[in-house]
Image 1 (tube, rainbow, N blue to C red):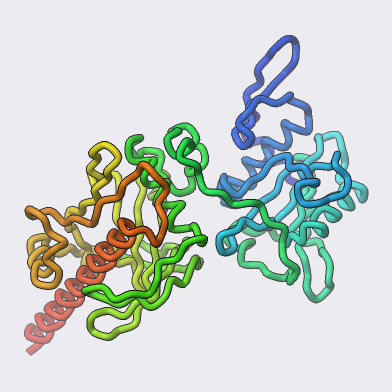
Image 2: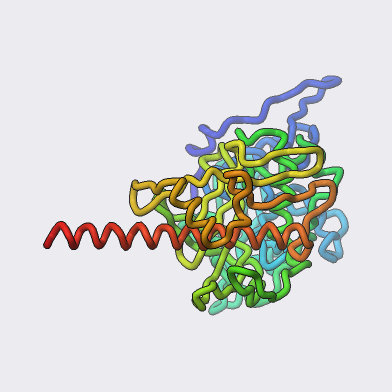
Length: 397
């Protein structure tokens, strides 16, 4: 298919001159590279797949030696690899071969990218030169790659599991403490989670929480808490939840619990930016968001390496309505008074001088408090809904 008309509107990378040579900056490799015709196309392809198809920045790998995956020819490189997270691992989802505009996408180019795709067991393969794009995805029925013309978003792509063979994996390492203390690194690598307007001083602890939630090397053990019983740490799932603001499809760390009334629930946690600006810790219970905890609005109190999380108590009830903070706090005092300290809703304190883990004492306490708070918020919503229904019935009578 032709893509040249679209590519005309994709901004070209800025060119820098050094010692008579042209360079451009590659934000994915974090370095200046020689601005060859192929490199110029590659940078536009990255923008094309990121902004048109929604591929998160962290799921791009650029100029990867195939020898990294045991490929026999040490000289061959994959131009771009797109990954998806399965469990705690990043697996190769797609291979992209980029060529300069004057290089046609012929059989030899297609053969090359499909050879890589077959070796890596990827679901998709693409060959592109900025003018023509050829797309392939694996067909279990055909037991091979077939051409297709209807491009899919990243969210659609990650739902494909046609290739039963295990995709090659990219080592998915957590940020080191040095990286967690490097604001530039965090802004560049966590932009799919953390909003651009989130205060700099909050970024490190939010990145640490994000890594903790999506790190499957540690699980929280089943145990009995005061307000609920934790049955199982179900790991990472992609789930869809809703609230009055809309529907959210994201990656959640899911826990199975039984509340104090004996009802079994699934509680999911995700970190997401809101309109690319603010950052929220979303707490979903079954099919809705019980709490969209915006972390920017003076929600984190910092004292050295200690980060204390507080909440205003604001709560939406139904479509467009809101409850009274004073009423919610009164319910909290009756149900779980330890959540309120000096009239402030306290969700816990985390120490940020080391990496957080799901089974660490401080993080378990943080999870207990935030789940309890979310359950009480749902109880409050149910009470207000019941009051509204009674009021409607009384009016009708």
